[in-house]
Length: 119
Image (cartoon, rainbow, N blue to C red; front, side, top):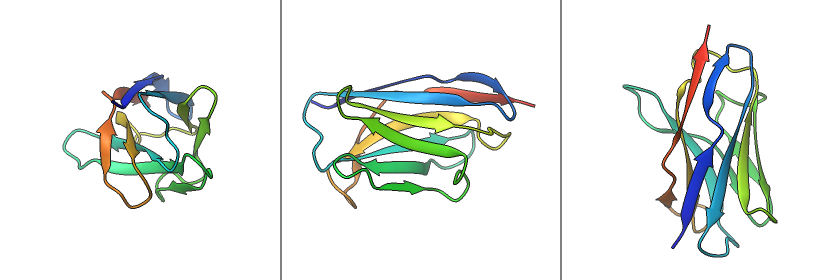
């Protein structure tokens, strides 16, 4: 059974940085795609970034390109989201999710971690 545990959220000033971590366990993740989503109050959940576990191909939403970086550590079975230049549009609950392959639905989710940005 896949388990995803996020950490690293918190309060940061506008322009600051945070790094989110997602520790994965329960199986091998070959061919999986790992994604970071976020959901702000009153808004729909949106995909922020994803990474192919095997080949490392990445995708970013336009709103975070150039500011966020997704990466993975195969030895630690952990996915990271480095968030720089945080702005007032970034606060949300950030979720880690796993899909069995590219274009498959994300069917495993973490519990979420709150990111708050003060102006």
